[in-house]
Amino acid sequence: MLAGYARVSTQEQTLHLQQDALKKAGCERVFTDTISGASQERKGLQEALTFMREGDTLVVWKLDRLGRSLKHLIETVNALSARGIGFRSLTEQIDTTTPGGKLIFHVFGALAEFERDLIRERTHAGLVAARARGRQGGRPQKLDEKQVQVLKRLYADKSNSIQDILKAMSISRGTLYRYVKPDADLR
Image 1 (cartoon, rainbow, N blue to C red):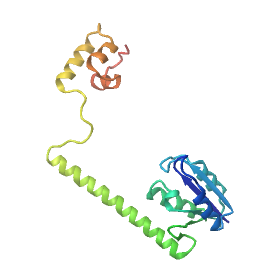
Image 2 (image 1 turned 135 degrees about the horizontal axis):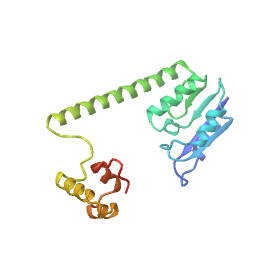
Image 3 (image 1 turned 180 degrees about the vertical axis):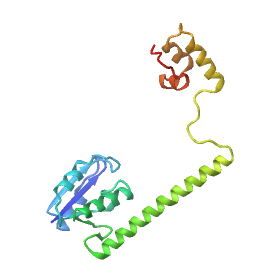
Image 4 (image 1 turned 30 degrees about the horizontal axis):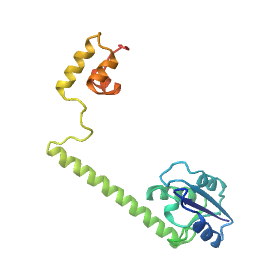
């Protein structure tokens, strides 16, 4: 059985184009979502995945309708494959129920993995080069050494309330405790 999945990102967009293409391709049932592709929780997709049985094929109008990223797309299609479910994309003409379609999809997967490895390698090399020049990564410190000393003195003086210290130093409670790390003092 062919089952379709269509998704648009906003209420202003319509599903008509995708639904028509999926029906024309022979989909007996079409599941839909109106939600950003970046969203983890897509009810229509979950319904489609639950509905699908071994031997069925999930059809989408375009690859980007199914996956949030190439990595997510590959994971989803591999999960379908593990359950004996095929995958078809109408626009890209990929059909994992055929040997050629499987090959194309695996080439996509290999390219995505290669790209991730290159990014990881470049990031690591950039960090090493920055450290060699004395640069430190991460978020800059909120307070300099002089301000930390003032903060510690204010905190040590029990006549100062936490709220007064926070207001005087223009910091959050989390920042205060990051610098003073009180043992059991729960004022």
